[in-house]
Length: 315
Image (cartoon, rainbow, N blue to C red; front, side, top):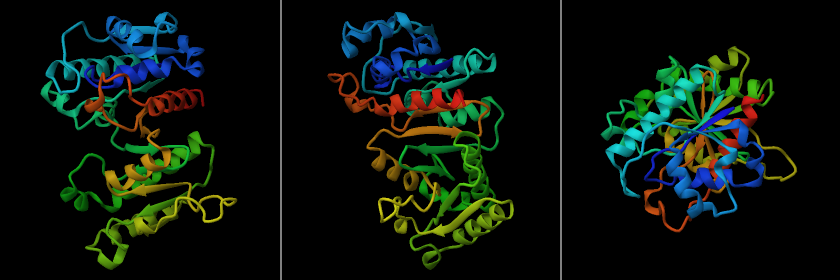
């Protein structure tokens, strides 16, 4: 069984969860899915988003928070508390073996901060809760996979965080992912440079990246770089040939997230590597600007996150 949180109640989390569950491909898995949120809230919203032909009766639901009033489309302390409580309950269920994996709906980092949440995001929460020091955010799609060396850091801090140790750690995490889940013994990993044109405009970061690549090669990992990010062709110029690399290492958030979002057409997944369980999430945020507006939120990323979590926990 896997768990699914509904995220921040004032965002699109509940909508995309309900829409995903209403698809024919997931209805059959109802007994193997545990919704973590609020039963009454989901029942009130199911008619609005998926119509009368869908019933939550096939799915297991556990309340993480009680009823309260909130407004759609804005960060609120109580919504941050509700999101925090879902993560705490999910953590307990994982530790006690009630669920094998977790899919997290989007949360507002602002609302979480208002609620006293002491972590940068859900990724960092799970890593701390389970005592994991080496972890990484993998932007996943069928078309492209990129792990980030730095996640939620301002650009002015990125340079000092691009160290030989940090880059090597992410190379190893990505390599381990392919061995464990993709059953690929020697994946080809491309490592991005931090600066434009790599060494041409380098202030030293590329030397550290190169040292990490050389260390990875010594341990038998197939890694190349540092490669200028703007020179990467994610697909072979000849459509009958496979791409040059199986996956990539990006130095900062937007360098890795943007191409995955573009090639997946918004259906990408955020997967946390290094945890003792599978954790996935849609590769997008709470979308306050469209929350509760005629049910227009796209559910493809959430659907892929649930499918990926199911697949990998069965692996």
